[in-house]
Length: 334
Image (cartoon, rainbow, N blue to C red; front, side, top):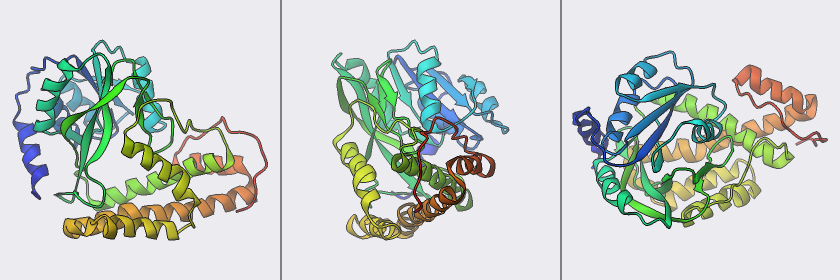
């Protein structure tokens, strides 16, 4: 079981390069410096996607060349955040297929999911507007099956024109505007091939984005759209409530430790061995503890120098172009 990622990667690499899909489906992939993953992702999509768009944020590596060489259509646009970039793609790409699928560059669809899609999508009644799939994280070569991380059922496929993205700086949801959302069996595999140094640097940047999102809620800055009207799965509704209502109300720092215990002990994350320990500690404790520390720092900076100075710091020091609009109001010290 531990080598599922390697087995699926080998299957993907062995697939014929000619597109043979009978599905009317457009896959959209956002990229920046993804030469390590983009070929695997695109090849996995070829049996199901009649059209593949790559929206690239001006990569300097071989991402664009690889994507175009595999037949994908590449657009380039300056990146703000995932939600903004993907909503731009939905609003501006000339999508002429019946279905749209969102796939991250370090994800790929399993052969089982591809088979299910070719059977389920063409037979979907008009009342069905989208499909959930199960996302499986592979970390340090091992599928993470416990800790409540699998199956993580997410909306990835919807009818063209019915999908929209919650405009947040991190952890945004895709929803459909109306209609039923059904389940399409099979795994979408999330397996990043970079090392732990890259992984921690990436999640360090994510922690800064999470701080922006939390400050936006706390100070009502008007930077994000925190909810969109649409269909979410029951688990997503619960998770959304915990993330936006319950977790922020808990004591800083302690809440990160409590969340780690929940994932690693109560949701049996320890059953995933050493990889489960590392994943739960970094994902559920270290990253969220860092968010609380950065949130404290941000409040101090805002109290001392004002909100606009902090916004400038985010742009100059961290490359996060938050920018207006934010609401003019007084801010209390933390």
